[in-house]
Image (cartoon, rainbow, N blue to C red):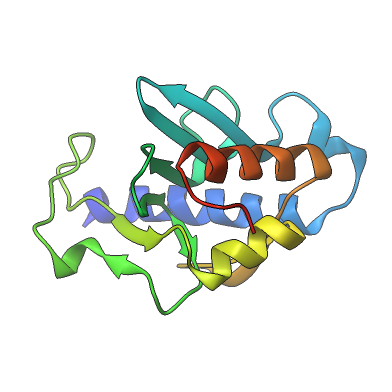
Length: 156
């Protein structure tokens, strides 16, 4: 029971922090250690994540490779769209960190929810703490556009 409760409480805390960070329009978001959108590359894979830069504190991460029509979605929250393909519908890998089923889903890079996010900088997400929005600054919206351009899709 404790094996389940401790990670669940930690995940809820991160989700609550992410929701609070996205709801705030103060300058504290630009401070070191603040939650925000970050783009990185690992080999051919692009990673777009909402969390604390250069840390494992992530609420949401999407990965893609050039020319692929879908992104892989990881994290405690996921885009709020009916077009999300959950890993439970396919063969599901085991997460090496906790031995549980990996929390992974796939989404088309042409999904209307993602296109709207690229245009407006607001992504509706859903997690254990409910539904809320993750916002992007103008600088972060440029990163989102770069992610879609790299993956080989047209930016909305």
